[in-house]
Length: 171
Image (cartoon, rainbow, N blue to C red):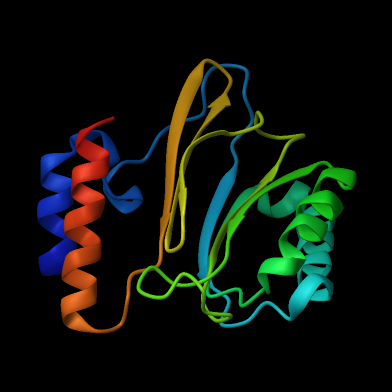
């Protein structure tokens, strides 16, 4: 995995790994947290509701503003309901279903859930099975967030990263 991703990051210095770049909050902005998590099945709409409740209850301590999840396993016919439920609770949900190597699959899927009381609404740059990229404003700063869930099999994973590299270079 590192062998495949590292060259991609080297080619695109503006997408450095979060652990390699720590930022202090912009002046006057509170610090926030971002979590990436392979949820291995969110538990449908009920699971999404539990996640949003957790984020709301722990906003003060954890400062959790963004959750990027992989393998949510929501069905394609649940996505509009999930987005609506998120909006009602002051969240923005950017979500795709399927896997990068099988877009029609009921397994897989990625999402970015943003607490819009802590961050601006996201501008969606890419939204495909296995890959979502957005920008959000955090004070005077613009954050570029990407959530990736690559295929398991080697040849499909290599094809996925090569396609991804081409898309990111065109930005």
